[in-house]
Image (spheres, rainbow, N blue to C red):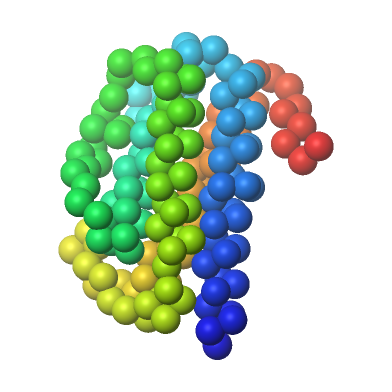
Length: 160
């Protein structure tokens, strides 16, 4: 069982750092700062907002919940932000967040996967918290890819 648990942690690290992050980086390379903050409508999120939201989620669930590091999150601000933070600044911040998350996962003892943590007012296991972050990152990476295709109007060659 310990080998399976370690494989879960290792695969989670791989998905966050080597599969999802590079796709988002490639998307941002195709866009201008204006594109990154474009919205399909007032009720929609921009790529910039989605990146801020992904970071907040990772910091809260992995940093605070799993890593027990202090954090402060203003979740609604992630969606309300309208200042056009430059795309390079966004990607550097996301890289830093992923690096911190990867360090937490790299040093995580697989035996703690069944331990309970309090995150967003609910009790979840460490395994659930990691799974949530990977799934959440995947969902929003997909939205970023779709929005990039809408703005760039070309094949992004994400699997080449």
